[in-house]
Image 1: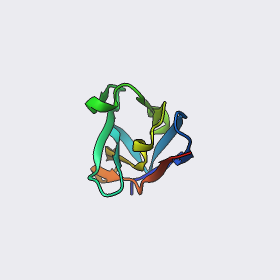
Image 2: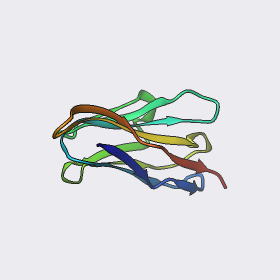
Image 3: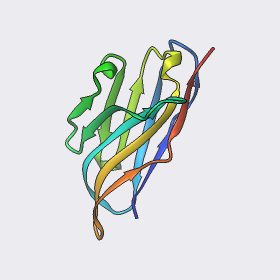
Image 4: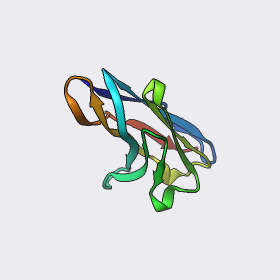
Length: 120
């Protein structure tokens, strides 16, 4: 069984920064890609960024300036650093990925999400 667990959300003041983490648990031997989406209240879930198992990032056009995605392959964990937070960044941030389980093969998974609220 493979699970993705996000941590690092919370309440942040405008202009602040935070780092989200997403760890893959289970017998994962290869990461194809992992990434972050977000869903603001009343809106659709949208792409923030993805990163391959080799560390090649891909950002949604509007996310390039303030968002940085990275991966620690040994820990099967990705990170999303966000700077200069704005109220419109308020959303549930979801981790996703396509990973290979040693027994079950390739799997696609979503995490449960972590709430980020930007407010003074």
